[in-house]
Amino acid sequence: MRLRDLSAIEVAERVRRQEISAEDYISSIIERIREVDGKINAFISVTAEAALEKAREIDGRIRRGERVGVLAGVAVAIKDNICTLGIRTTCASRILENFIPPYDATVVERLKREDAIIIGKTNMDEFAMGSTTETSYFGPTRNPWDLSKVPGGSSGGSAAALTVDEATLALGSDTGGSIRCPASYCSVIGLKPTYGLVSRYGLIAYANSLEQIGPLAKSTLDCALLLSVIGGYDPRDSTSLRVSAEGYASGLTDDVRGLKIGLIKEFFGEGVEESVKRHVWRAIHTLEDLGAIYDECSLPSLEYALAAYYIIAMSEASSNLARFDGIRYGFRVEHDDADWSRIYAKNRSMGFGAEVKRRIMLGTFALSAGYYEQYYLKALKIRTIIRREFEAALKRFDVLIGPTMPLPPFNIGEKIQDPLTLYMCDILTVPANLTGYPAISIPCGFEGNLPIGLQAISGPLQESTLLRISLALERNTDIIERRPAI
Ligand code: GLN
Image 1 (cartoon, rainbow, N blue to C red):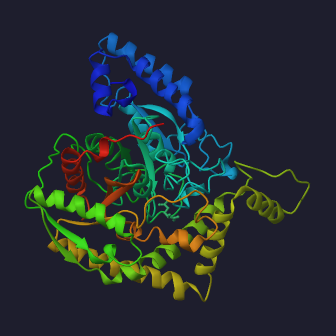
Image 2 (tube, rainbow, N blue to C red):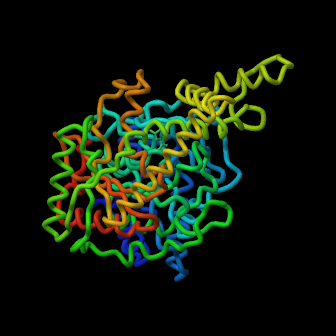
Image 3 (cartoon, rainbow, N blue to C red):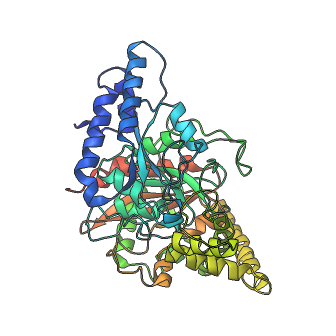
């Protein structure tokens, strides 16, 4: 087995036992990035030198018999909207093209505490607005399974990097599906945690009330371990829950006997492709063979989920993105203008891409006097109704299941000109963000050579149930082991 194929758990264990050196393993990852990233474009920045230096330091500490963390030596790719001390963090936007954060996000601090190694910052849709990684200022990421297809988004770089072994673990953020969608399209595991389980301190905000940072991984146990490391209470995030996130990996079983699965009727309805349904059904039957039981359930308000999501997300975005004006940091237009509002306008119109500007304008509109009640308040009410429906369903079932995406990966360029069609792709992922409930995407099949993902949603803080299903599918099918030829 090549070093870059090892799981995070194996890397840390072997490095600690001095069976392999962190330096050799990191070198193999860097070599792989050099070999394939010209085709994939998963990274905006690669921190090769610093990573190697850190690897040597860890090897040295181990030789001297010093203690190292649970992720000792493991290469982690970090989405470029998560702040990293001294490492450029762009949000894939021109307006932050040269922004170097003076601090680490809490999740990054926690990774470092466990001796993980940051290998680079990954490509994404600009400010995480999109589902394809095509709105990046740095060009699109390509799907490793078929270079003409999108890798999903907005955390497309993080998912694609894992698929071709350019990293062993990755972080993404999920506001309306941005971890699960690319996980599904690249055939890796991606988990959006319960709202408040993972600190958002240092995550450059798109829509605060919806988003969470979460793990992407090539195996369930790696995903569980990464969640344990990044999760848990953080006093620097006022929405952080006072819970610990320890033990997701150590306590995990694959026993799904007696597990009650609710199949969300609306997730198998119109607009969801037959091929997608077929693969999800096959996974459901695998779970049934392993002793799980299922029944259908209906969540009728889901009809309004997408509209409510986009109104809330854009409203929050319009407020969050007001801070980018090119005055204090980031991109600034050369000008001889004395009028500050004209300077702002120039910086912002040149610094932001089309999709970001569209959302700032629509969000501002939805929040403006007279429309606030008609759009924003109504969306909040729908959000409450949807949460109640989920709450009721999760009294009957342990977990709700459906596809992650309504269709397999599509061509680059195919939908980007038509925002509404693109927004429709998020129809199955946004409900979990509206409710704040955790949700996972698990590889469940291939249509031709294109990956299909199954989505499971549980009640708050029931991540271990989601991981249990993932482990059961991982151990009883061969889907997740497949790798693209590149
Ligand atoms: N595609 C959705 C959007 O564009 C979700 C993005 C995300 O989760 N960051 O808003």
